[in-house]
Length: 144
Image (cartoon, rainbow, N blue to C red; front, side, top):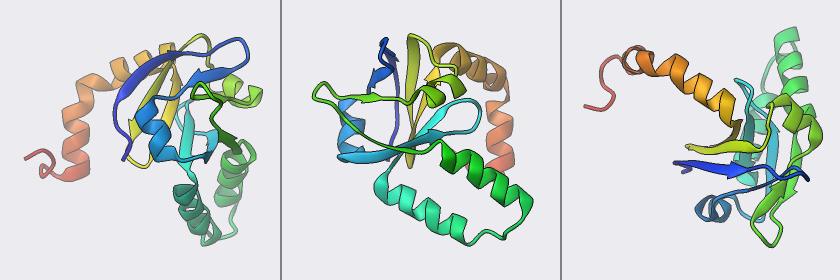
């Protein structure tokens, strides 16, 4: 399970360090793709294969086709360099509006990479609603 929030810099070659604990859990090769809410999703290979199996079961309707195009066309297999960095493809960097300051977060089965400004906007726009969101999702059974 991926957890935590880490602040790292994107260098001029679009490389970013992934925290060592996350590197271990990702394995040698993994998938980076467009995520939701203007961030990138990073999946271990086994989790990526589970997602692909689910997509194969989707009906051949416009929404499914469009989502698969969006999600899969940006996907790229990555591996770490000797410094524990990954090189992000330029279209992915542009999609997530990544600049020098980035935030790497663990979200259970995946890692997300956010531009610092986008992450701060996300937090500030949702922090007041966190209790309501939890109540709606878990009908009051969460965190009891």
